[in-house]
Amino acid sequence: MHRAIGSIGGRLLRAPLSRGLTGGSAPHLWGADLASLPPPVRQFVEEGIELCQPSDVHLCDGSKEEGEALIALLREQGVLHPLPKYDNCWLARTDPRDVARVESRTVLVTERERDSVPPAPPNGEPQLGRWLSPSAMAEAQRQRFPGCMRGRRLFVIPFRMGPAGSALARAAVQLTDSAYVAASMRIMTRVGSDVLPDLRHGDFVRCLHSVGRSQTHSGDARRRSAWPCDPERTLIAHLPEELRVVSYGSGYGGNSLLGKKCLALRIASRMARDQGWLAEHMLILGVTSPSGRKHYVAAAFPSACGKTNLAMMRPALPGWSVHCVGDDIAWMKFDDDGVLRAINPERGFFGVAPGTSERTNAAAMAAVRRDTLFTNVGLRSDGAPFWEGLEDQLSPGTTLTDWRGRPWSPGSAHPCAHPNSRFCSPAANCPSMDPSWEDPRGVPIDAIIFGGRRPEGVPLVYEAFGWQHGVFVGSAMRSEATAAAEHTGRRLLHDPFAMRPFFGYNAGRYLSHWLSMSHRSGVRLPRIFHVNWFLRDPSGRFRWPGFGHNARVLAWICSRVEGEDNAREMPFGLIPREGALDLRGLPEVSYEDLFPLDRSFWEGESKELRRYYEENFGEDLPREVLEELEALEERIRKI
Ligand code: GTP
Ligand code: SPV
Ligand code: MN
Image (cartoon, rainbow, N blue to C red; front, side, top):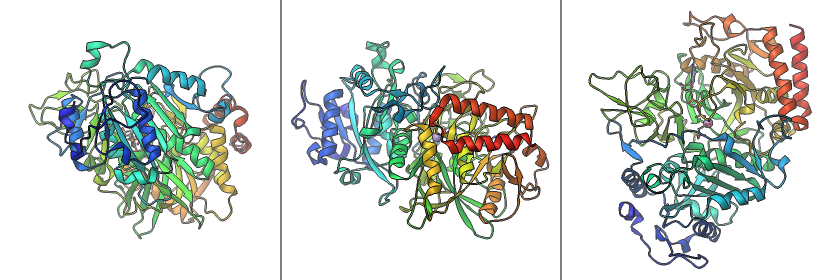
């Protein structure tokens, strides 16, 4: 282990670690001296070392050499395989049991249960987060962490979420025993020693992560595995009152890259509520009309429902352009002029690979051709990655290997790439990044869009009647289950604000926080819309071509922001008047099919919503949201 990475930073220190470490021989230290760390960081690192007992410690500095050494180490460990057809790209294959976020093992820890979740539903599983008491958390940690890094290296990762110099940005530290996580964090966040001064006051989020030690796979099997994990005991815990994240047992995505869902959504949403801002599961894009007018919009769709694709889309409407600010998370705050400003706290994309192609997302294809870590995609014998929907012509003689490393051929019963396989690429590689994507002030948001996978009943686009109705629309979001978490099948899941797996506090209070934005004086509230790219015809085909054609919907949204009078009132919201939505060149789609009005559908929808709110929000549902539901029910009766 030491050999591969021994040159990191060229500053190997063999001095024993500082006072306060007990038992065993002190771990070797790579990189800078612990004593050089701001005292609160040093204390956090020393506590982690004492608890987890790593064999050596590497303080990450974010340098290029460090990145190369991490790749070399991961190759030596058998985690990364080269993809020579692309430039500096690598393939990781995980343990097949560790392939997605594990929502059933993701918890919020607060003194009072009600601060984390609304009252539990009378029967069945909680839908809006799971609570664990502090004492149960202490016990869970005691059962998992002591000595869990024995024989492994601990990486100390100082990182920043958000552009340097932004009042909205936050610095943090992650400790992890996964070199894959260390390498991925360098892409997804701003890792480097320059973050350290921002940590000196100690008010940063402390992230502790271990891939764990499986108890069922012991001895040899455990040593042989290139992807250690402990699925039986996986736990992803958030302690918002202490600004801590503690994650054990998984090396995958949102479970292990703790800056992403854990910090930037769960912990940040709680901070945002206390401090009067918003931390949301939203892409941010800028859309420019042929006349040069530009608007920024933020859009919340559940996992694997099209955020990355919309954020990077190449408009199918001549003269329009779309630029990407972020593809997954938005931190937003009203500025002194009352303008809602948004930053992307991330620095890279952790995007769904299947379905990504030159046709659907050329910008992503350009981004992933260099400096990218792929996880669980297939492999072509010519050294390129492969996945379902890539739409590449294979030259004769090219053979394929599936995500588990087994030979694969087209037509096989299993997909070549795992449905939740991902690319992890620096945002700067994306040719359509917005010139302001790293502007520390953020970009001004004119519209907010909600959406989900709705095979029937929900039209292509509608506008909310106002802010309060818009918050209701967000709370009423539903979508078909996807492979991004452990759910299976085509079930419709409720997913308020696309935040169901990511609320950092009681979801009822979250809705109140959103409603409270309209009580502020002097703010310009964005307009709110709902979209659905996923209507299906009776044969199961999508009614809407999607992707670049979604620009047609963005164009109507821009026209509304600019105050055009081109909408028609429906019971559920405002839809484009016939002709106001540009459908030219799409002979196969009909306006009527895209804007259904079916009384029995909306009756069923509102009945289900009422049941859902009652069971899951109980008395924590804001009165205004219930009023909006009642108003909808009333309008439906009049259809
Ligand atoms: P997360 O990273 O999990 O948060 O997902 P995401 O919301 O960024 O979803 P993404 O853009 O990666 O899309 C997920 C899947 O939906 C991919 O397979 C896409 O090809 C598909 N998809 C995206 N946009 C459209 C669309 O407009 N129409 C159709 N039919 N499919 C789409
Ligand atoms: C999501 O599931 O919404 C993702 C992927 O963006 S993960 O980082 O694994 O959460
Ligand atoms: Mn996401």
